[in-house]
Image 1 (cartoon, one colour):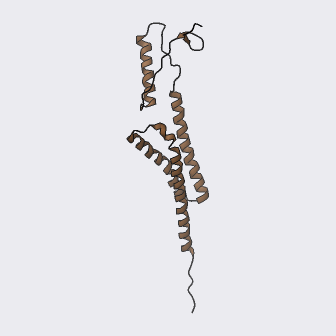
Image 2 (spheres, one colour; image 1 turned 180 degrees about the horizontal axis):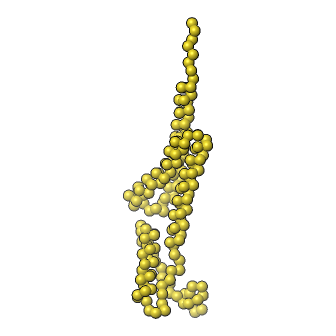
Image 3 (cartoon, helix red, strand yellow; image 1 turned 180 degrees about the vertical axis):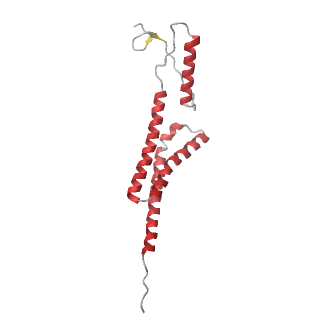
Length: 163
């Protein structure tokens, strides 16, 4: 193969081009726009026998990442709820703690969007979400303990003293 020639899988000669995404752009929107432009180029503007073919398509990576994040959030909520139900035995408290996970994530995403913070920094914030969930578990445990003490006081009967 002559030097300076690019080919994919040692087949036909190719010319390489790279699409760079601007900072702050939505990956899914950029990928769908690139696919639309490639389709248009292949149908209209290129000579016969020449076509634009994607070599590395990140759309599958983005979809897999979003699926993994969603799965992890649901698994985290389920595990927290199950553990709290087993150890505290109070479904309302378990549900309250489980709801802090998606609401804290939603709140963080809204604030990140409002302040222009890139979504990539969310992975650093995962530690913060762990702290939020831990704090919620501690508060729920304290509430369960106080409720248990309050019901214990009402269960005791006071017998009158005889003189």
